[in-house]
Every structure is written in C-alpha cells, then in structure tokens.
Image (tube, rainbow, N blue to C red):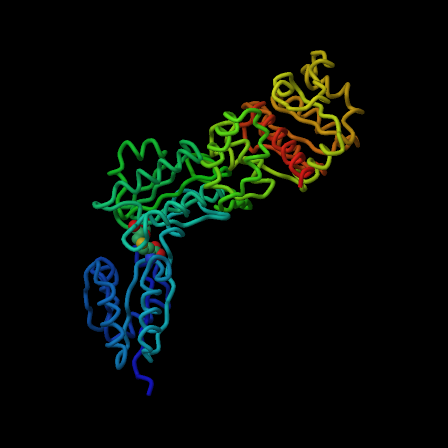
Length: 454
Ligand code: SAH
C-alpha cells in the first residue's frame, strides 16, 4: 500500500529568500521535516514550522535515504540550493527511488538556478545558446569535463561554469582557463560571487587574470565565458540573442590528410601529424575539412569559431572549381599562396582615386568577369564593400571567399557579404587575412580533387 507521506525536493534559489518560489514556500511550510545541508537550511529556517534536520556535505546519499524513510509517513522537504535538477539533489532521489522500488510520492520543485540569478547581474551574459559545465571532478572524471568544455568552446557557446574551484582543486580552474585562452583567446569572463547574498560580488575579468590569481574565485562563484557575439557595453557583459553553432568531436578519416596535397613525403608526414592534432577536435564534413585547413594554416584553434559558411558554399565552390571557373582575388599575396593557374589579381587593374582603393577599383573594372566565377578577398575591406555593390547591381559570382582583416570596415564588410544571395565563406569579426583566404581556397581545391578520384 502506498504510504501517507510525501517527499518534496525543494529548490530554494541562489540565496536571498525573495527568490524562493511560492510553491517552495508552501512545501516548506507544510513539511513535518526539512532536511538539508546547514548552509541551505539556514536560509529558510524562519519559514519552517516542522523539525529541521541538518546534514553535512558528502553525506548526500545518507540524507536521501533518511528523507525517503521519513517520507513513508510524513511530509518531508529535502532542500537543494538553486534548482534541484541542476547539479542538485533531484537525480539522486530519482535514482534512489527507482533502484529500490520505493513506493513514495515525491515531487521536485524547481528553483532559480545560479546561472539565471547571476547572468542579469552582469548585464545579460546568457541570452542565446549556452553551455553549462561544472568543473567538479568529485563525481565526473576530468577527461569528460575537459572534452565537454572543449566541445562548448568549439561550438561558440557562452559557457557558464559551475563549481569552478574549491580548496582541493584550484588546478581545474587554471586548466579550464588555459583551454579558454587556447580556443577563444584572452576574452572577457564575467564573474559573479554569492549572487543575491550579502557578500555578492560582480566583475569582469580575463583568463590571464584568473590564472594569475586563481584564489580570487571560490566555490560560491559562477563564471561566464564570452562567445564571439558577447560584447562589453557600458561596463556590462551582454550577449545578443540568436546565434548557435556546433562542431562534433569525432576522429576524422584519413582521406583528407591525403587530400592535403603536400608535395614530398616529409611534407606529407608533417601534414599528417598536424591533422592528428586537429582531428581530435573536429569532424569530417567538407566544412570541417576547411576549418581544419584554416586552423593548421594559422596555428590557432580559435579560428574555428569565426568561420562562417553561407548557402552551401563548400559544395557550390567545389563544383565551380571542377568546372574550371576563374578565380579573381584582391591582392598578390593571395595569388602567391594559391595552387591554381587561372588567377586574376584585381589590384593590377585598379587605380587609387578619391573614392576607391586600388583593389576596390580593380574589382569594379573587372565587374563583368566576376559573373559565375570564384571571387576572393583576403586583405582589403574596401574590396569586399565594392564586391557587395557589384553583386547588388546584379552580378552573381559562383562563390565569394571574403576574409578581409582589420579594425576599419572588415567586420562590417563581411557581415554585408553574408547577407547576399551568393554562397560565401567568411570570417566573423575583425580577424581574417590572406593566409586564411588561401587556406580556404586550397582546401576547396583539395576537396575538388578528392571528389574526382572517388
Ligand atoms: N543546484 C545549484 C548548483 C549547485 S552546484 C543551482 O541550481 O544553482 C554549486 C555551484 O553553483 C557553486 O560552486 C557555484 O558555482 C554555483 N552557485 C550556486 N549558488 C550561487 C550563487 N548564489 N552565486 C554564484 N554561484 C552560485
């Protein structure tokens, strides 16, 4: 026969009792027993009418056992900080009940988790797609934590880091910040310590600063790692909404190593070793292959996060290469790197006048030649802007590769190219350059060659 009691697993929010839900308050007030860790119980002591049972950290299983036993004939609240389903007690109760076939009624009452309490204190750290990673290796092996953290970094998610540190494992935070630096650079990291509690602290720092002084981050802290969209505006950490991208962590096949086109056996061996490194982090779609080429060409894993593929660009580009379409590039530096003969350089045709740079004017002169061909801008934002105008006037290249670089118009020009109804491969933000442009085009040529031999 089913027992008369009931077990509530109650999320009590981040700290301030104002963040308790009405449902949580009702459950706590109706309970004969309230069980929890001392720090949590202290926060709700005043509203509890029944008996309080304190238990210690590390005694979670014992706490659940006791709560379940009491709930056979009493109303019991087992309290959990924040939300019980997020690094809390909910799963342990569910597992325990299922494992033992216990016939009690129980209900999980959600609470405000640290992430949603802390994000608005910084500004709006989390608005779109995000990943949540706990650095605690008490119950999860460090290898799994690291793999997930890397996946999140590659996926360009804003990352909320729970359990960043404790006296016993400062090292995990340092290792995590090293990975952040490797994949994203020394980007802004938002810190919220003791959200909604008396000792609340909110500031923005960087992986370098955290590594210099890891002790500043304790176990009452949550971190937010910016993604490529996050901005600091008026001292606030803001991630505008609406962006997501994810890479798979899969061992790739050998084919692409062989397709890399290295000329000598020594070069092939070096290329193979490079791929061994990057294959750990990327999948084996044609897009992944282009990403890997760029990562290897720059020695910079974070390049993976800024590449943008628009309108099936890789597939269309491969077809254009196979059809022997011409390639028109902005500068000689791009031509010098390309393994192709049919390359025209716009700067040779241009003249610098009041309105245009030489590359922009060169593209305007060559405008009719761009139709149906491959157009690449590796250097000059002005050339990308000219290209945008030309396409708007009705000329349609088969593919645009645009990776102009710098702080004047580079990001904006590429954003405009992405809005065109033409397949494109671009980089987001100010980064880019001829090296990346060449890596993309040579990568496409390798893929086209590989296709032919298949
Ligand atoms: N179930 C809880 C999380 C428990 S794990 C929840 O949903 O919030 C404990 C971790 O949560 C801490 O190490 C810290 O990273 C984070 N955390 C919990 N409360 C917090 C608060 N008030 N301010 C900042 N971080 C907090």
